[in-house]
Length: 166
Image 1 (spheres, rainbow, N blue to C red):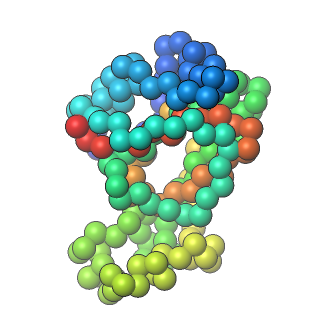
Image 2: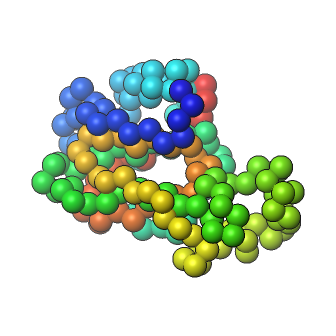
């Protein structure tokens, strides 16, 4: 599959056990998790890190230490009704929706030492082009190098899974 943002509703067959794992302070990642993500991507994967999260706010970021990130919402339906989830951005000066490749750095004349300054979190530098709402048992799977932020209500439970191609 060549998509860079994939949304899957009803991801887990029996999601309540994953929801309950939050109460036990345990991040429940099973063969079902790995198998379903591998099937969606069409190849084997390796879980680099997984965590249970509750609400997050972050600056615009891209993660280069992984190939994919999965956010799986585990709050019950009435708790997430109308809540926004992961936001996606393009960088206004360059139009890039992902961290720049070496060729793009040359094209846009970006100095390696200036990356932090060029891609600062100043809101004037970013245009939000998408936000995928939180929904119980919804997985949002996206390339790690994609510019994104987590502006998720503090009561929203979700699993964050960092993935590398296996």
